[in-house]
Image (cartoon, rainbow, N blue to C red; front, side):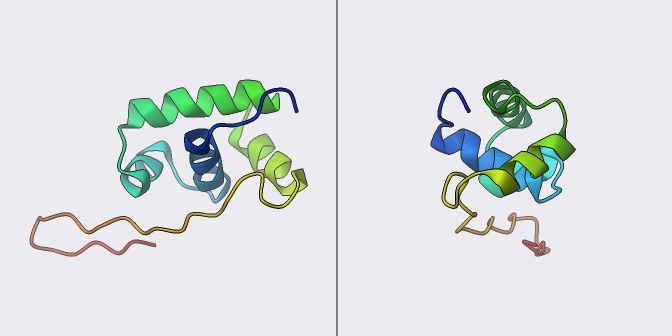
Length: 86
């Protein structure tokens, strides 16, 4: 691997590798979808992958700790109904 991933890129990569959509990742990390797209583009370049599937496989091959697991859950929105975090 060339450049190291930033903390934001690692969080996005972990969530995408778990099978979440860009929208779901954005909600979970409390960022915009554009931010997810931007970070995902940088992750693809840095890890030399072209798809979400390749990303998931690549992450499995990285040393433990390279892409940390999510430790926080998204908050429920104030819409009167509670959304499940997972």
